[in-house]
Length: 335
Image 1 (cartoon, helix red, strand yellow):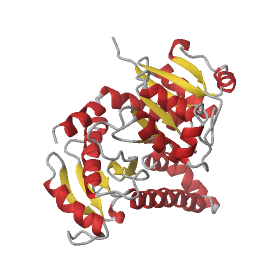
Image 2 (cartoon, rainbow, N blue to C red; image 1 turned 180 degrees about the vertical axis):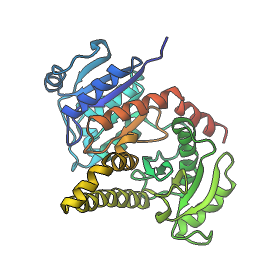
Image 3 (cartoon, helix red, strand yellow; image 1 turned 60 degrees about the horizontal axis):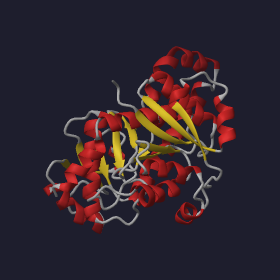
């Protein structure tokens, strides 16, 4: 008998809530018999959205949460004051062991704060990193950290490397994933104090395939499978990556529609171009997990639509099937 993966979805978080969140949930339970979803949010609003669909009703439930944490609110204050918000209620469901994962496109700060304050860290984990998969020429790489720990210490980055390696091997399926530290040069003596102190620790760390430094320009080429950095550098890299991609698409679209000849050419290459560009669509790979929490917490893009929500739910399913939290716990329990 299939073991059910139970995912809690914040139905009120993100630019396209609740319509796209609900749509993604319905797609997931219809296509995977071992997935169930709890939609957390304003009950009447969520149920009205569900009325549009036919789905296995025994695998989608609705839990009421009247409040919504807005993006501009101070995260810790909002978590403490808005006890009946969709984020807090959802995280508590995971904390109580009634679900395997929590997914939200809402306030990043509230999700990060709540993940640590409510769900809690696995014993031995010093700081959970927010670790998205980013598309590259060779597939995907994991970036740890991109938003949770701006003022990280060397020991934190070593743990990011370990958790990122476990994720890439068992969720993505890359054996012996290559680990690199984000740096301003390839030489060992390059970098700021954090990088210089972390580099030798990564070299000596057992169980990871450390290959040295990686410069930002090499990231899209897939130079490394696990990219380790503090959240400040990681967030700058991620936002530049996303911005460049969007700009590139606009430029290509403009060039292909600039004349009758280019429009004819665009029709001829449309399928090949679409397939190529799809590889660099971050929404195809789900959300960013907060690695090292006792239950899986995942942040999706604020602009997430049904496809990304669906992909994130399936990401949670793989995470559970591969027992990633047990692997993280076992690794740190022997250190």
